[in-house]
Image (cartoon, rainbow, N blue to C red; front, top):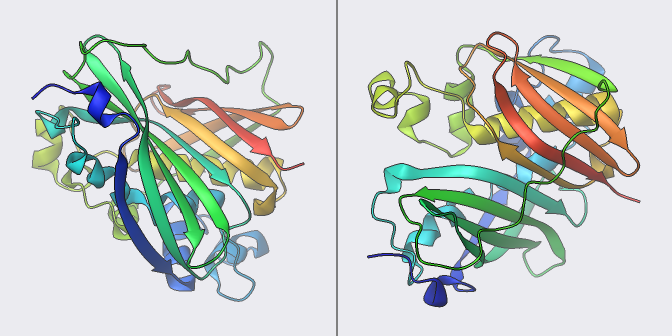
Length: 286
């Protein structure tokens, strides 16, 4: 059944609850490369030791990741072949720093639906607050559904956050390990594409690839550590476009340009020189 934009646009996603504590936060940080080179460095222990534990802003994608699965229950959004769905972009808006322990409630909606011709671009917005409390963060997942276009309507906003035509202010290399995807998948994303060689070949890859949201977290950590001196509270919003894949064991090279109250970001693989994250920015809290 083709996409019915009139039914789907603005439709609610199933509400959800989540909880986490220091163990889940530390596991996430290890999954995005914390303490990979120096396990006892003070800056790394701040991510991996419960005493004084801080939380990367990108952790906010974890408690709501299953909201994307709720898309299948939305009237008018019956995707013919889920295997053709790609995660195109991710944005998280931080209303305040993420605590190391919390119980949360999330509600979501289809915030945007665009016709790309041969594909549909579906924007899912999920707002999360502490249980009975104040807003914590808002995620926007941009889902690219190949073969689902042609229903008519706008094609969507143009790409933003292009870096300036000058050399980066900072460049950070983040080495991944051969078992990085196996570690990261313990945060909840059990897609076999990231673990099973046979399944990866069905998807057109020689071997399993790293999760896009793992790269999202690795780049977030690079910016926070190098540009913001480890201050996770300085991040008001972080958004990125997934431009290519990473194979576990490769090195991500993150380039940063400071432009006023934003840090523009781009990342590529060191070994192959291929893009990983583009049109990315970190907006700073004033």
